[in-house]
Image 1: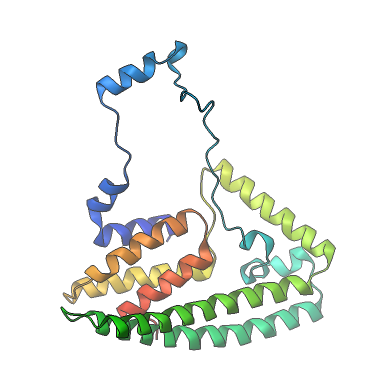
Image 2: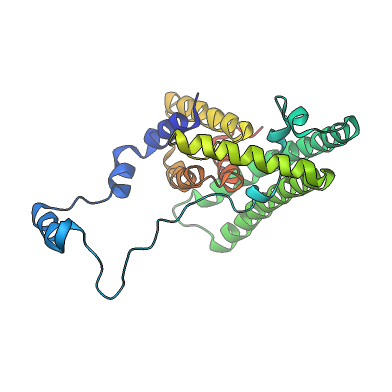
Length: 249
């Protein structure tokens, strides 16, 4: 399932038309359209005292663009980059260690998020306990992000300048193809897998009649991160949502 379709399904699942209504740009009425067209010859409007509009900001992940993620070494990537047998063996060993650490941290994160939900559930919430529990969640998210970064830095440091140049060529080609197709950045396979797991958990929760309203702000936080290619941050949010669903086990 394509990531874009999954995101749409997840957001619509809880937020529905409300989210779309909040985020949709207001359309100019007939009078405003008339003024805009008449602002200057040719129907082009310029802001007085400001000059030409600034170019639209291009979003992306400013960290990931300088690193080499594990996903680049899968499906023939190691051969394309030109890894030696020793390099590939060393990187795979580190990836296995990191994977075990991720699993441990994600289990802990799910437990702490569930505990945070319990603290927040009463009509009157103990503010001190809520903040202390939130700190536990944020500390685990920080440790997961730190582990991601350490793995990516380790992989980059094992590559030669020639191999890094090849990595940059691959990334540039991927960006060019994505731009031609009018698509946003491609999410790593791990993020797509977690999105599918999240969608399945939401569907099951609805079938079981569970109250999923607490997930609504989390999903709204997730959508722009995925759209802008900020996948490391998005994965933190997905882990939090899975923890709230009890799926991070």
